[in-house]
Image (cartoon, rainbow, N blue to C red):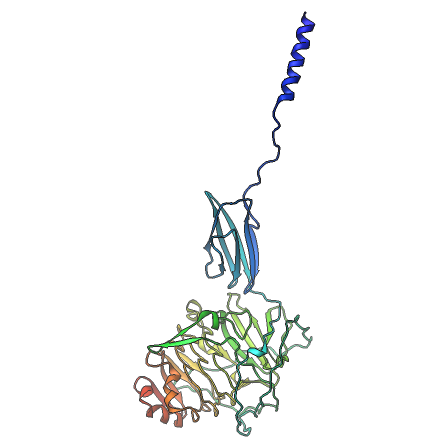
Length: 423
């Protein structure tokens, strides 16, 4: 009897095990980010997504809003763009859960930028004066060939001269820069390109309003203008091969690497020192619109800068063939610069268009334009627009006697701007 009972018990147990419903051993995947840490270069992008959920996600920059920007803040995928060197944090919320992504932005660009030369604005040819001791020979007009995207060329191993800070003192009426003779430029048709990213602007009661997406990049590169703290001209197109060079790009009109730009961050503050070089010195384009606009124009940075160290090497910059300088120095050092000097080599015998050339330049600044500056070809009806109207931030200019005479005769200038003649 006991054997029968034991047999029935075992049979019943086996039957119960066989009747147990099948249980899925596969656990549900957790909601997570595709990356908890990402690294992106300035001007470049990276994508981050939230996985294993059908719920809506919301994204927010909780730290470093000036370091990165994000797109599609209510999508499962976002694109992160690096704005300047530093670290930032992004929070992603999915229902009641939240996730954090740490972003590191590096100020390095290894890819060379090739700008489509077809975007270069057309410039009318004009005869240049014969070369004198301070005037460069005429650069003849030539068509810029189309440029295709290509890898960065190898840089020759020859070291270029170290860029040293030139001694351009701040402009004051009592201490003017000394002028010394410089050699005329070797005859060449190579020159700096016109700024391809044209600034769209409008004048409202004398104030200049720039369209951010147009002025933002320097000569078609990935470098934001507001991230540049200084510009220095050098007399060599050879890009240094040192490790401190963060990136370089071709800024020649012909896109033949005859004029090169490169940048560093020597003080490691996230703002760049920009260099422009051409063998024998940099020849300006007749169309020099927007060239220095917004350089050293970031409020928190400008207050810590020395204005005499933000525009260097002007003895290596040949400006004689400039015809159009619309907004050329607009908002240059706008926050704090009190004294700005262009030295005595900034010759403009062919200058014609000057709309907003010095609009919002500095902060109630004294501007030394130098012994070679000329407005002989500027029409009377547009002369006053040079300083952006009565709301402009320039308070005093120091100019040659013949320029002072024209400014004094123009009531739109003389009524609000102090003009002093260079002795």
